[in-house]
Image (cartoon, rainbow, N blue to C red):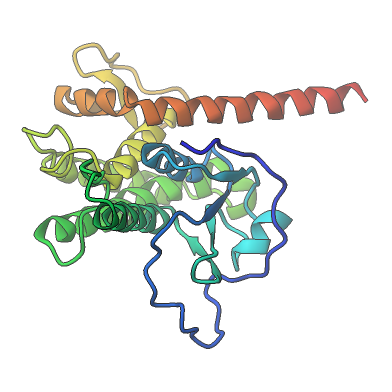
Length: 294
């Protein structure tokens, strides 16, 4: 594995959603590993992408930055995170991929293509491709895309993000308790629906095993546990009193979902990504402490 590097952010133009004319290289498949730079705070959605990058096992750069910062605005038209800068020297192109689900799907597709190209060029390579994202135009890919969009729309955007906007960031977006309460009901219904999709044999959402959509689902569940929307233990052990500061009861955690989340947490790539997140938090606290001494 190529060593991970942490560098100052590159000075790049806003390439996401660019209106420039199509280049001849736009439709060329990436055949070898490009330089990858991920922008974003690991306490937010960019954590999903670091987890995915660790699953792939290829080196990357990480630029720690908050939404709406100068660094974020350099690569995202709205200054949001995450954003992935891809520098493909072989095809002489660089471009930006935004949205955590789109980034992970791109990474999975690219990994499969590069590994397939290596096997084609070297008959001695028999290592199977890491099927983190299924091949296009397959039934498995159709399910992957359906689950990915369901998670992002029904769990993330219409539920968890509503809470963050009108609770954690109420000083920016204003308080909206009715909207937050409805978002919690939306979360409960959507989680019930997607829990039924967990495959009994593989233990994950897809029959093929762990995939990028499991990163999204488990991350949303961990997020829900942090804000008191989802119990941290199974219903037998969960106290009956409401979470302090919340007007609703946390949704009970079924044994099946608890087992699923536990096996996601045990993955080596998750553990590594979480350690990187903790390092970021520790570094930030150190800087804040230093500033308080000035």
